[in-house]
Image (cartoon, rainbow, N blue to C red; front, side, top):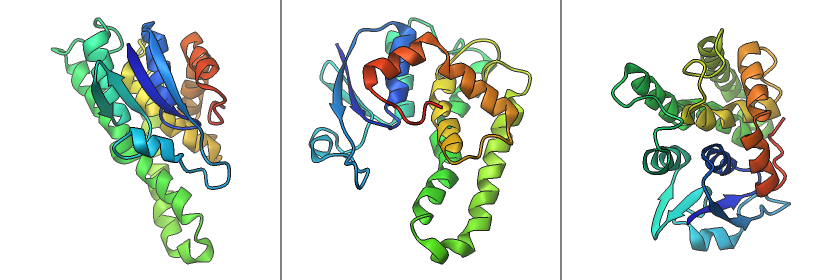
Length: 208
């Protein structure tokens, strides 16, 4: 049985959604953020080597990092679904998107979150951070123009992985200038498997 260590309002929602898309049985170990600090509870620190979610357990094996978990589940349990043929050029594009989400796209958004706590002290950094956010959201928007999903007309794990970037951008009010990106994430939110993941995982404030 696959076990997902799931933190409320976090990246781990993507793993629940992935498992729902694949129709795989799984168990959820739930952790709630501290309502004041928004940090993960000590129980997650005890379960995960970094004290962060998601973490997946599969027959004693523990996997961390969303991209690695998505890759693992699709390779070992997907039966060829949610990824292109590994021998195809499309697979290389898929892998690039899978790594890009957390490797590049999330960084400026996270910087904006953290520097927002500094007030005026962060002012010198703001033009650079805002410029990089626009750079990445524009890149994704252009890639989605005229497409239903990142690789065309079929959902892949790359869409699931990159969805968190669009959700965080939306929570910051930064999606309206990118119509293809906005339409893509709104359509993803309507997928039955996405909705089932929200029902099973609990309230998800970024699902908007």
